[in-house]
Image 1 (cartoon, rainbow, N blue to C red):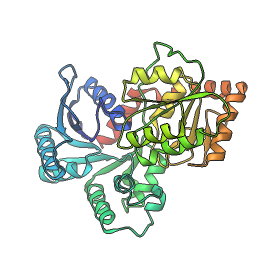
Image 2: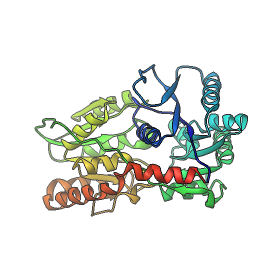
Image 3: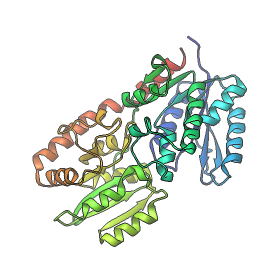
Image 4: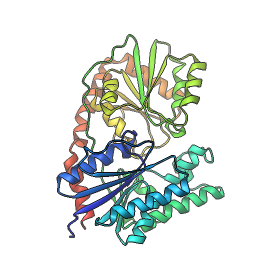
Length: 372
């Protein structure tokens, strides 16, 4: 076993961004530092932030730089960071990390939180089906090139870590050896709400990047069929924001787009809402579902990806088929009209999240794997 003294972490998103990697990396980096491991983070960023109070260095590269030049800047920053590092831990920015690994000779461990190739094809509109169909589809040339881009980083990795068994199977399908893929469920550093946001009607909330596979448009269209008064809160930002606002206005829905806010503010909205809906066509292991459970907000989630690994239907949440309007309507009405079921979901959800609250235990698992 080789003792690790320093790690370079690479990630495409980092606070103030929201999303799984943006939640995971600061927690992971902070706990590594507490255990005496030096950390540098290389990330993309929309603007410069003051990171001076952090116990590790953050190297931010502007997203506004054209991609080819940006990739070069990212690789250069990773190489600078790895001069005194024992290994590179990629939590996205995998291609750039793989190039830096080959140049520096440093070990590369990659955490896979999704299929980059599918997501790019889905966001661009080149491939509108789900992630599972993408794996077997007859793809266009651009998607094939993106697959090569993805697989280059996969094959350059000394080990792959996934946050769900579902994703382990996906990665194994890319011809990466199964024995080199390890599963570690993400721990979540929960924020407790510190205030109640007043409401005068039933409140439904979603927290997501506003991109196609999150299925927000379908939620909006489904909500038009509810026969009771409600408001819909959408937390998050993304390329579909203006389009979704226009759809909501045309449907005459009482919808509020909150944008990106702090984890504390998210917790306040969740704890002040009657229901959380996730309608993704894909999830690796959704943190936000666990955060909703922790904040006593009943969960209805699409039965895709790693979501069924955290939502036990009828016990700590309700599952439905992605984009199934009738089933989603039925589940919404069930929670609204059945106080006993609502209480059961809240109580069981609160108990379930304790399994994901031990961040130090999660980091110990990573270190044990990394130091092999």
